Image 1 (cartoon, rainbow, N blue to C red):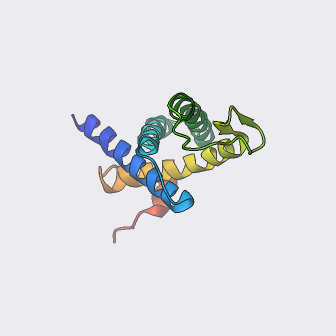
Image 2 (cartoon, helix red, strand yellow):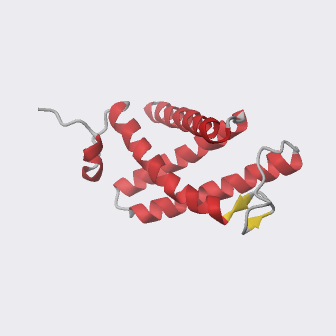
Length: 144
């Protein structure tokens, strides 16, 4: 039950933060993007579990990036193409596929995955009181 609560917390936090980022960057968002952001944050959380067991950070970021790009493509094909919602289009961006994904954002998702890992570490430490990894201890207050 604790694991379900943890995943729901991570999903909700990821969805809210991603929606807020879209509002800041684009001026608006869609509830569907909050759902996709939440799913991607859960994947980052699960990958971060593996990183804590020795999976290298660059591999966590690469897998996360590929998952986010695949999620963007799938949700774009459903929401933008099949349902005609026109949430985004990368048609004018070089190296795009079907207007739903592009190289530029694929690289951005890699960097945003690092932010997601750091956010996951913050959630683990501050909400679930898990001990942070040594590499992330600089983000936590030292107790005297």
